[in-house]
Amino acid sequence: MTFTDLLQKATKALQDRGIPFAVGGILVASVYRKEKRAMNNLALLVNAAPKDISFLTDIFPGELSETLLPDSAVIHGVKAVRSLATVKNVLVINVDSKVNLGLEIVFSTFPWFKEAFERAQYNRIDFGFGSIPSLTVEDVIIAKLYSSTVAEDRYLDRDDVQNILQAKHELDLAYLTKQINKFSLEFPKSLWEDASEGLRRIGRSTGAKKGKLLLEG
Image (cartoon, rainbow, N blue to C red; front, top):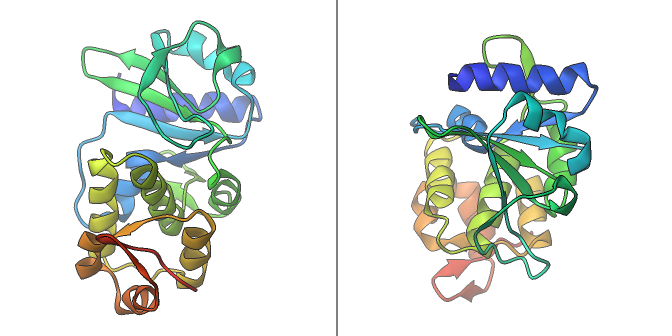
């Protein structure tokens, strides 16, 4: 199964059952990046409980695991999944271990989820078989900054943000500022060279944490 096959099959299964979803992760990040990077995991945000997407484990049989995000907002690895009833954060289905192809189902436990999901319904991208809801460039940045804030080893997330900034998109600075402040996200100083003047100007008015800056509205 190819990455495109997985995308089309998974989104069709959700559409057929009337389950709202949005594309996230590296697939959407690559749309906004200046340079593409290799993709192996398809991330789909779903507005449903884990038990309501059990059909996906029938369509894509494979080893199940969960990315852990406890209440303290510190990601600390993965665990095997024995029952969907225990899943809270991100369900990972190992679709094809031979090519390291996986399906990540992201649930609404992330604080940035609600607004990002709602905005994605009006931001549709055509990946070759019709347009489907996808995270906006601002919400990809927020999600990536969130991951790199709560877990310092998320180097690829920081690389995604840097590469997206290098693409010089016209960003909704008011929305970015609001969300970054709302979730107390860290904006590493290493990203400032690639940030727009408007984004840098907002950041300069803040206090600094050691080596990092928070945006201020």
